[in-house]
View 1 (cartoon, helix red, strand yellow):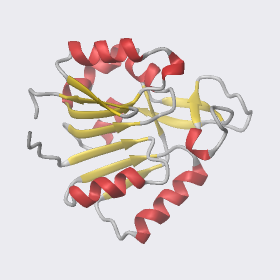
View 2 (cartoon, helix red, strand yellow):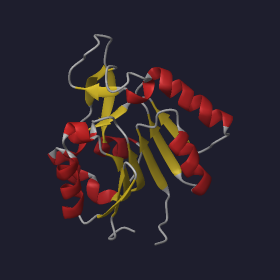
View 3 (tube, helix red, strand yellow):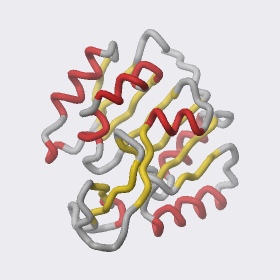
Length: 184
């Protein structure tokens, strides 16, 4: 299947390696790379600069079911930067971070459709897909690449929602990949 990719959202971009990889194949795509951790965000921006990438918008925010402020949990998994997790509870008493709903992210950035939506948000996918808000954006996604963190017991619910929304699902390693044939 040959799918045209013009718009990419990399939610949970970490230091930007997925964005760099995707920009190699989709050089003209507009990319929004979201990373809430300040330290990791700065490394991501530096990596994009080192690779001389263009048409990338770096956003130091997270993605959630609604736009608001969240706390963060640095005690998730091995406590390294890659496992920075957003939560409704501020576990570390170190402040909050702004998060956007997918609908608001699309509105603010004048995006009608997300051609490739990569999501690796350390358990936040449970909240992102457990909401009425998903109906406002999921039908506007062509391809979704999602890491589901099984310790949050949400795989069945997310995959069921994607299937009911018409996505054809496959798996590659830890990734769940969904293609919306009505948009592809």
